[in-house]
Image 1 (cartoon, rainbow, N blue to C red):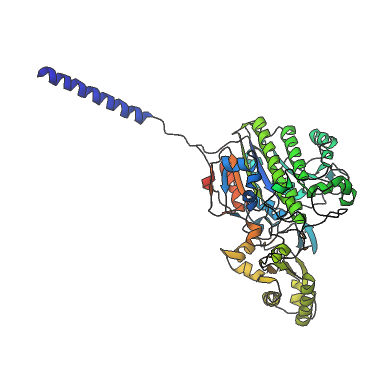
Image 2 (cartoon, rainbow, N blue to C red):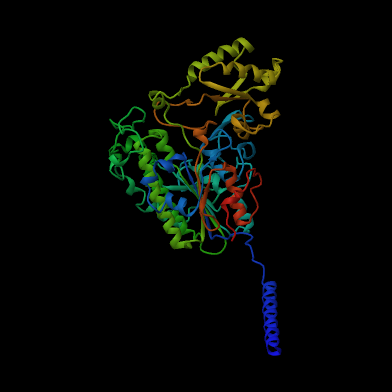
Length: 558
């Protein structure tokens, strides 16, 4: 009996010792550390000019595994991503992506706009106080000086004490300059014309670096002077309309708008290298140059984060010319998918897989060609701007005795002459209301809002919310016009954009790479959310005018 009790006691002591040891070990374990920020060697921001969200789904089966599909399958897809302002155009679009705010804050209210102080039209990136670099033309007289806030790229430069490099690349000057920000190392754009060279501004440097000179002197661009035919058999292009139709533009020198397009034969009539802009070759040239920048600038070569901002502009040129339902647009996206794949492969090799972060979005989407919609019995149409202006001039003459009370009409905004109205003893708010009521009666105009409404109300949804986010108190007009859904002021061929309607606002947002989760969401995200999301990922300050919010479900800090 004593022996049995002794054994039980010993076993009990052992169990107590083991239990105590386990508790002691558990209590002494260090708590799991959470990353305060991710440190990719390189962030690549990609803006696809005029990309509708449904280009992802429409052409999905045509894409390979290394481009769009890789981003979706390995990264995060925001399926309900929108611009939350109008006008939806290239300058404001690129600026809003990178500043994390809207034209109401960053001040880029259009590609061009009427400047109320000077009384002249101004260009969003134009700046004649700087000289061209790489060309004798004035195509390099550019800077970001009209952008009133910082960009995510500016914040990276400040955070790294300017050790992190920032380079912007695009066919369009504004597509390179505005994303690169105020403090960029460089922004480069394509001159086209007779040279086909990449150029810049003295805002950034006094002469081109040797790698850019070498690229311009190579035959890289000249090799694209060749016919444009479909990459795959045209009969497999089932997600676009008929090749021969009445909804597409016709290149000078061509007798049909169908494939193939013989570029060498029509080279001189269409601006020589400018012709490449209206083809997928322009995107391939951009990819070539971006890869040269990756190598020439040693981007992602150390642990200090660099930033490469790429904008693919040819999608916009092709969409404007041929329309969003054309065989040309389908081929352009199939080829862009291949360009993305080779960029990602180069990043894997040079920077290292898992060592870089990429986001891809658009600067706006686009409407289907209204003449095609009309033929398909879908409500759509074209504004008769000439008839409207004549009728409006009669109204002004009758109401105010002069047409001079209106200074300008641009970006669907009417600018009034406040001094003339004051001299006529006309109250500005009442003049805005009277003019708004007159314009609302015109065919094709669906809604009209006044500047006073933008000042005095705070909208949270619908068209007025989108207009208010695009309204800058110092730069925008007095009366804002909203065409009917499906109506545009444009030619009867090709597509365009600029409105507050959903076909212009719904664009993709894909993210993948270091610090990005795998998944998707159908929750609404907005363009100004992108910069705060990347800032949170990097652990740096938000752009100083940011109004967007980080998309928390995208980020991975484990």
